[in-house]
Length: 155
Image 1: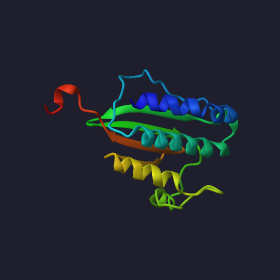
Image 2: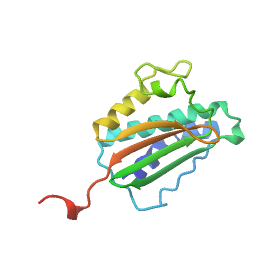
Image 3: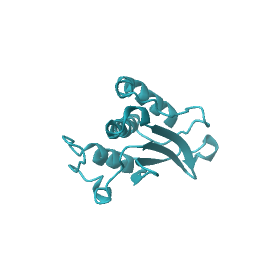
């Protein structure tokens, strides 16, 4: 269940959220559980990575203005996770290269987190994409196939 993975990752990262004074907007009960076809460890890795990147992006925003919104939902046959921060966003020239191995916009960044996350998402039949958020910041969207309800499973 996507909401549980997000809740777990947020719990693990609670010290990081606290240190940066960030209270994420996330309501795990906003809708029915979103069950996706995913390898648990891989999904945890992606969610952890997206949250950590957002926290790092927010370091450049004045403490009282930092915003991080996490949403879980459905889009047709896919479960959707969006992580949106109000950091400075992604430079237009960096956007197409964001998922390349060893490409990083962060000082000291290895450039492996997003590359690995995108590879893991693809391997599970999903996708990971990035865009600039309005009025500022970045939005990462993870799409993964939903688990078919039991009635639809082949005998």
